[in-house]
Image 1 (cartoon, rainbow, N blue to C red):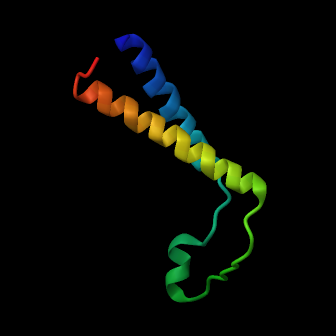
Image 2 (image 1 turned 90 degrees about the vertical axis):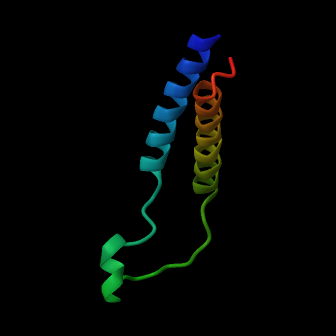
Length: 74
């Protein structure tokens, strides 16, 4: 059981990292401090909504596995 949860933690951590990197950038980061950034507020596409949901799901799975392994609940 411990090995199964460890594999779940590793896979969900990798998936979370990949999904975060797959998101479309929403701002210019530190370039927005100078006021030169252009902010576009538009509707998110359904693909972006699904990507958000998958990212949150994989993060929650990673967090749950980490808590279980961290507190030795297995």
